[in-house]
Image 1 (tube, rainbow, N blue to C red):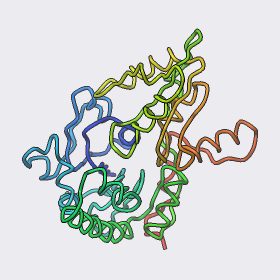
Image 2: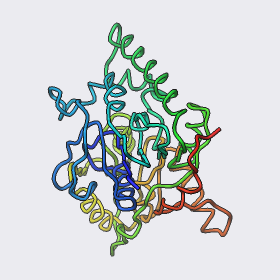
Image 3: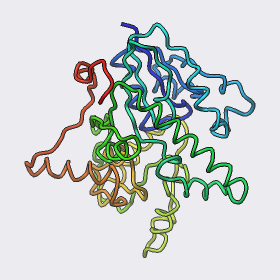
Length: 322
């Protein structure tokens, strides 16, 4: 069986890329993406050293640092990927990867991290955070309106939808009018182990993008007595997981993982929930996953996540959902 895996774009390491690596390990597919600008270290971590087959956006001016500026071209680019000859198409999508064009007889299984946030659930914030007012804001809203129509139309053609959390499944139901099966993303709790000795620190782990609202965490802590915001440390680029794991062990005692935004699945905070607690915005994936973990600890029924996706294939079948 020939298998293709489509990821939105490959530029950094994060939770979505960890899912893609898991799918690569399970299915050994050919990988496709809008662009592939991973560093050598991240490429080894995410793709096992291989390169993704990319679209024309890879070669446009300034694409390495500003590929997101070509947002209006994303649907056209993803549809131009040639997946003829593949029996199974997998997509891991938080944007347009699930809109890839498939052929009659092909099975398309899409793992959705979230419907496009900026098009469906965060349009006003997206426009405001990017300073798009007046005519620019009007044009951007028209682009997002077209993206929503395109996204809904193409999602209706997918054979089977998987969601990374019940929060995302609710969004899929609202945005696309379809049901999905929840399969939680891989969580490597063994990598984040306790460290000895008392500490009085706090840890926030996030991509530094506007909607994650790291600034709110800093503002909140800067107003506390003996503010920990006066001693900040940050990481960026490849190799950050090991650095974070090392620091998490150092702040083990009297520490907590923090999040200021409703997450789709909240896997980073679940990874690091082995500190003393989780302090996060009480909504989204982190709330659902935390409450279900607490229910399992109390011996109550709870749905399980896991690292293995293979058994889902026969359950999804080869026909589109009704």
